[in-house]
Length: 432
Ligand SMILES: *[C@@H]1O[C@H](CO)[C@@H](O)[C@H](O)[C@H]1NC(C)=O
Ligand SMILES: *[C@@H]1O[C@H](CO)[C@@H](O)[C@H](O)[C@H]1NC(C)=O
Image (tube, rainbow, N blue to C red):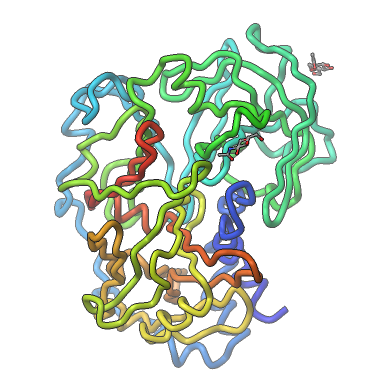
């Protein structure tokens, strides 16, 4: 087994939508990552590691960023506006709404929705890589621990429930959910859609037991002409509750103590980004995918990706995934040392990460740079720190198109706007 038990949670996080739209084990991410990744555990397994990682970094080398460096504290700026109220001055006019998200250790974000009348609250992952919405069902058996450990939907408690009865099944890389479809009102940030089809999960794989989220709300595409059920976002658009068919993510960093993470429905919120958006057109009609010009270092002196490489933006992948041959070269260039196992994780020298180069993503001719602060995953326990590269390789089968996945570590650096009306994605520099 080697390394796998220790960093399995990370691998799980990584393996995510590397395999495609509906194959996205989002819920994995809520597992207790840090505990199982204690540097101590890794070092017992790999005695060579201590030489690589400078375990007892003096604290002052990585000072905590003082809060006052980031004066944008929404609470001070909008003292009386609760998060779920309409916010003015959105780019596209009209009324957009913010959903406050909770940041779980910088690897995963989730937020509340309510289902039914009266509404019952569930925490869900908002997943751009899948389209179905599901929550645990009160009808799940006592033996299904994953279901029992989370909030459950009970049709008898809702006056707006409508039965559907078709069976619901969704498969992720490391687990699956089965149950049946139901319909009810679903409310997100005060916006209600009626007769929303969602999955009531009766059987959930064991891997979902420790997730922070109860279920998933898919923000990916549905093909209604192929008989798929319209997503929550589709229904928000068709039921006229959004001014424009756009949603946007601001994902914060735990260390800075900045504003809360936010999903904005129906527009973008200029409080959370600076400068202009770089837009890329979707290259597939059914997923948040586009063609990336290239990935490079040192202003293009070193280029790692194939030209016009497809990339998807995935709010439920923690790291950045790319074809293994390209990622290997990139990580070696960054001074990474590969740990055995697959997907391969690369360890970086924590004392050198401040000097690492920016990794430059060229999108639509514009350069979007990720600094080491964005792409290094630092795991700290009481005594030790370990630094991992946030670039993870995936092997693609013959016939599959090598694709990059720009996950949370990318979206944290770039406020991301998903525009279904104009079939494009926009990136702007996120506030710190
Ligand atoms: C509603 O849930 C109950 C169990 O709580 C179940 O027996 C019933 O069949 C459900 N109603 C429909 C229409 O599926
Ligand atoms: C949606 O489904 C229809 C019917 O199966 C198919 O012809 C069409 O190509 C699909 N559209 C997309 C975007 O996959």
